[in-house]
Amino acid sequence: MSDAILKIRNVESFYGPIMAIRGVSLDVHPGRVVSILGANGAGKTTLMKTVSGVMDPEKGTITFEGEEIQGKEPHKIVERGIVHVPEGREVFPLMTVDDNLSLGAYTRKDTAGIEQDRELVFNYFPMLKDRRNQEAGTLSGGQQQMLAIGRGLMARPKVMLLDEPSLGLSPLLVQEIFGILKRLNAEQNMTMMVVEQNASAALELATDGYVMEVGRIVMDGTAEELLNSEDIQNFYLGVQEEGVREERRWKRKKTWR
Amino acid sequence: MDNLQLLISGLANGCVYGLIALGFVLIYKATEAVNFAQGDFMMLGAFVTIGLTNTEYMGLPFWVALPISLGVMAALGYLLDRLVIRRMFGQSQTAVVILTIALGFVIRFVAGLIWGHEPQSLENPLAGKEVSFGGLVLGLEDVAVIIVTILLTWGLYEFFNRTKLGMAMQGASQNQLAAYYMGVPVKRVQGLIWGLAGAVACVAGILFAAKGAVDPNTGLMGIKAFAAAVIGGFGSLPGALAGGLIVGVIEPFASRYVAAGYSQIAPYALLLAVLIFRPHGLFSQVRVKKV
Image (cartoon, rainbow over all chains, first blue to last red; front, side, top):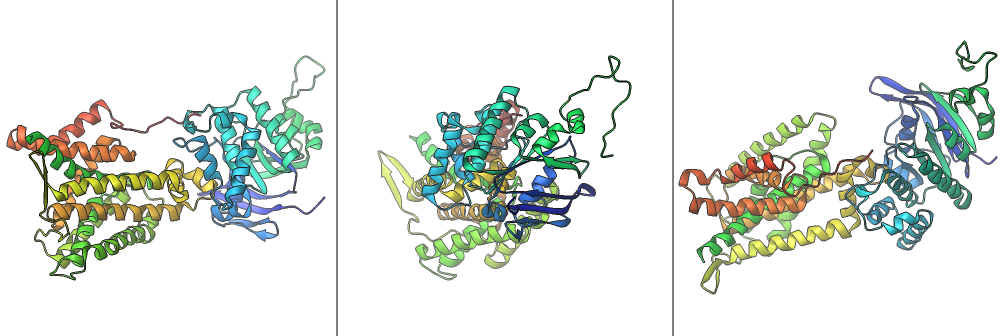
């Protein structure tokens, strides 16, 4: 495998006095999709924010294309090619879809390339083209999520950080959006780091996976390995083995504890 | 005819209120802080221009002084954010409010020290000229105030909707976090908005001093402009201007048709009424975020 484009080493971040991530290391290789699974409060979002520069790590290094980027201003990190599609969509509600997309390309100056990418976004999300003059705040949740992803693409990122793209969406929409993400990875060779609670959708999309619990990475492997792991099946995919009797009499312990 | 005359002079006053209110809203939208010194910015802008233009001070030609004072006030706004407001980051909103109120006092005293406490008006090319048509006699300054305000509003509108920086400012005010994620240098943009608010206050001050007279306490007019901003729906730029015009027009009519003691309270009575019946203001841009 080629060298990792994004390397996270022993990163620790704090929310005030609370240590939200406690020494996380992971690699993202070009062209791969890395999923980070974990429950609420595991530190997934904090990790994303630390990579995109919205939060500064207390310790550790984040290396992007061979250069350390931890603690840099968020706009410097976007300029280098990491874009963060935030949790909860966070579109600009009073601006049109078109203007939202234009702001996505804020760090770029190549007008022709920007227009080309706008067409690319419309190609993946035709709905956005139909509604390009509509205020983003009036879109439905799923449409806003598509806009948020499209807006992220407008920065022409080398790595896309996607925080809970399935949040609050119907199963059908989750399928649609993850399908588009999969196409983006296959057709545009887009490298992604996806944080998800919806483990089955995430592992289906991903090539590699990490499992986070209370600020640490407790398991990693290829998506296939994780899908086949009993622990993951039990605790993240909701597969239950049949006991000798009708119901299980004991609670399974996670093997990493 | 009388009413028309009242209307025009009311509109001219209202433009000044509206421009100050615009400054309030610009800063509030971008930084969620209220700059209660905005009225004093206006007064200071007027005095800086007077200091450059009037014969008893530096006596520069008006058109030379104009860009200098705009630049000075814009720089002042930017530096204020850079050196003072930004350090308050993370403090409560009240702290910023009290800071700006205190800043207003400081500006008033400094202006009084430099330029004295007597009302002064700005020497300008239009002073004392009148235009009349159809029996209507208007001060040329009043007409100029209205025209300048229209042009400035149009310019700001174009700036916010056509330029990259303007869009970034809108973005930063609508969703600050998302602006960070899109690579907008939010802090620098906020500083520029403070600068813009300083320049707009300066225009308001120049217009005010051209058609009347300023003294260091003129800045207290900012309270009226604040009322205008609230009436228009704090957070809406067109609303701020409209609120300013409404307050400006109500005043002369109230002093003409309402008993003397009551006319002063007319704008505030309106403010109360708006707050009761349309708490988000007349032109609010409130939209509940979808989850």
